[in-house]
Length: 122
Image (cartoon, rainbow, N blue to C red; front, side, top):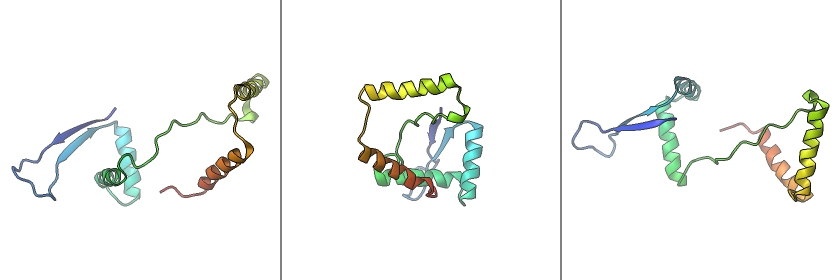
C-alpha cells in the first residue's frame, strides 16, 4: 500500500510556479521498475507522476479505465480430461443460466478486442 506525505516548502509565500514536496511510500521493487520504465521513455519518475496528475485533472478522474482482469483462458493442450470436461460444464451451466449474447454482438466485441492486439501501447 502506498502512502503520500505532503511537505510544504519552507518559504512563507509561494509563487504559482513553486512547488510542494511530497513523498510516496512504495515497495523498492515498484519504484525501481517504474524508474526504469520512465527512464526508457526519457523522463524521470517525478515527471511521469506530474504527467499522470495533469492528465487526471484534464479528464476529471483516473486517466485510464479500471477493471478487474478476466481469468486466464484455459489451455486445452495442458488440461486433463477431467479439467476439460469441467470447463465444458461451466460453459454449459453459464448458457443455461441465461448468460448469452447474440452472435452479432459477440462478433463486434471480438473485433474490438482484436483491434487492440497489435496496437502499440501508449
